[in-house]
Image (cartoon, rainbow, N blue to C red; front, side, top):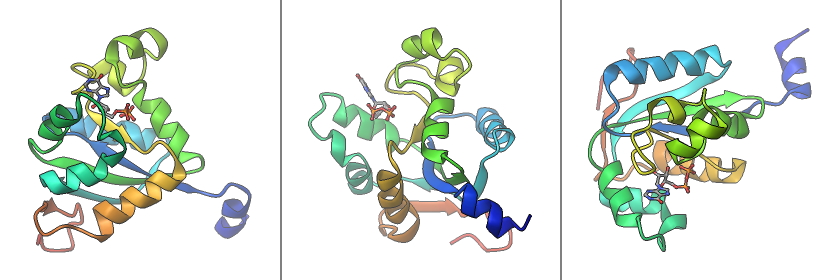
Length: 164
Ligand code: IDP
């Protein structure tokens, strides 16, 4: 069966996944291997440090939360790996793979999830994933298409292109 026909019956969906700052190179590689093993295609990948302004925009839905400033401090602390993941039902499947934000809850309800195994605490929980297809489209637009000059792109993940 032609690939187009398969994608007609099982349309692929995109989600934005982020490996957050302070994740060791070893763990980052492990996450990328698990992403592949779970059947996701990495459509685009890059390393980037958030500017404060861009992190605020990225998490604008959480402006009123008491932890908002801490979250911005964390997200701007170092390079993030930004991924566009494609797969049928990608949004939900990546959220399942991440597990709940709080690792103590994740250990109880989703012990195999990335956060259950690797998150430090409810703030420093190593990965992000869009919560809906619409959010995914918005955040992909923000991160991959409208790069603010203040956010520093480190690498595009594409060996054929020189780094900016
Ligand atoms: P999500 O990342 O699973 O979608 P959200 O509730 O949208 O969870 O929160 C976004 C991020 O904010 C979390 O991944 C985590 O880094 C941080 N966060 C969430 N709740 C708390 C909290 O109670 N204290 C500190 N940080 C939190």
